Image (cartoon, rainbow, N blue to C red; front, side):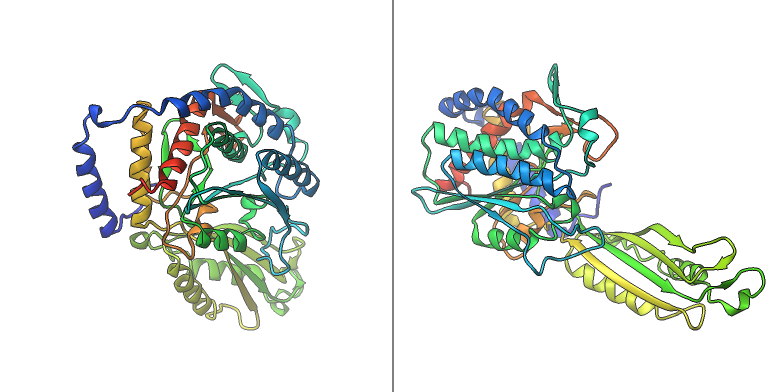
Length: 431
């Protein structure tokens, strides 16, 4: 759903639109023949990489599968000449209700060049799927579509990173100062272990490209995404026989219902704040006054400061109880910050459009906030350097019952885009 656009963004995009109107078709440069020839050579190998990645089930809670796929990624990055290491979850990982006991490890690789610019490439290896589901959707190719569980979200992102590096190696491009790759295994559960590393690396690099996919019907990059939080309420009352002595109990469901009703209108569309109660549970038996009840709400924000404002508002409101003697406890999980728009992203986005124009393809640059969150937001948390999202392949079916697939004919354009952008940024030509 479209969100309210900040005044600065409106002005920036008005200027951007005016600039684009002044560009005729003849203004686009011809494609770099060397790069284009090289990415064409990477198409079939990239499909082979996707086959290998999809063959390994790697749900966020499947440490065995995550170890297998992370080893594959480690080996591939090492073969490309990177200095590679595993990074395990820190002791102070940000634990939430769905955080597994053994969080998937990260794979980090560094490639040293001869220039000065530092570029970070990120993607994730974990999926939302449970172990055993892969048998129902194995890797297969049908026409222009390659299918497989997790292929678009985000195994294609990993493949694009690997084959962008292979392209740079094939054309002997080393004008960057350093390229760092981080592939994490906990994105789908809000990155409890990798968020600190992502933030630190984002702060240390001049440019971050995040490799989530683009929708099949809209070739795009994103400059802004929503922040995601969860509100968890737990009400403790007192059990009693519902038939013979209900008055001796303290009904936790009644109290929880009261709390939900008095916080139900905490969304603020003018600020892009959304809060919706989505889960509720309570009681143990039909004939027992419930002693416990819980509820959870989904929260989306566009600005980091809106988290604190909303948390404070909820904490104050729940002090107003309906049933004396009940206890109401709240946890506010900041699952991921928003990726907020900044002008540096717009500059890179405009240059990306020029690169895509070299191969006669349109590219949308979106600053409107969608409902989903991204690890790019962690990378952008402590820096004003550009951080852009959706450098993966065009894909469909993530987090759904539909067969998940990527469009094969997006491989060459997306590899060309990533390779050329790294080259131009390294040379100081993005401005």
